[in-house]
Image (cartoon, rainbow, N blue to C red):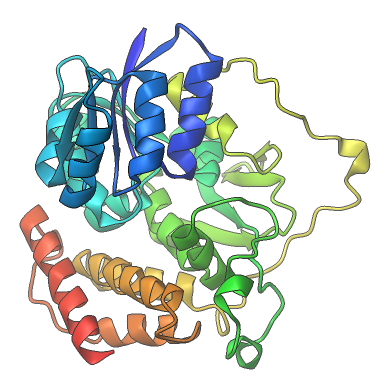
Length: 382
């Protein structure tokens, strides 16, 4: 039985991971669960899956949880110390890194150093610290299994292929809820509009990132690190139906694609089973009902997320942290009604004008210090 530590157990990826654990009885045990502050859902998960440990990052929420589950054998921890403790448990076989945002970086690094295989759904980890994570995985003989549907698709296409023959990664994007609109048409879109994704059910932060195409910019950088390609060899293609999850073009001009319905359970299950296929009872593609599959070029003038991400990477790795951190706080401000949708781009562009003297390959401390500086700058200015 493979023992899992799941960071982000109350979010979309975490809850679907637990559904797979429940469906595949006997294959997995839940050693530890972690989330930010959702006391009620965490209590339900503790009572159903009986983990040895549970962490809520928010200390006040952790105190409430501790009282609620005092009749169980689950030890409740809090804060970054709690995340680091469960991520390095001797009994852990695989860490599912599904917490949203840069909060996942330190636990993931700690788990890699401890030799734990990683099922990675936290793209910010590689975006800001890929130059640290990838060498550490090789050094510690750790397997990194992508959970994002696009990166899982690429991973599947590359399996048993000669990596030297890869010509280009073709990363698909649905285009989000505002596909086809021009810049002026986005001035007064609401939070409800941005959260109305046509294909995927995701958390608020990722759904808004999808609407701005910032999410796809993050995925471009993530793909560069996961598959050891130049960032210029990752091309984004808008595919509104979300049936083709990504493709790989080879130097002989062959293209391999992975297809499936827009459902995260397949990539999650594929990662949990280390790239080995298992049966899945959910619905399948009915090819006869598909009227067409469309492919479009991204509108970089309207949706600046991809271009800003690539620009930040090309400036030096510390600026991927600036890009990511400024987007995180801008995304939150939009959710809170403090800014309009298009101001997300304004805030990112503003933050990227800041000067950081760190070398091209910043340390973890430099990454975390930069994150704080960006947060402080934006919080003070906006």
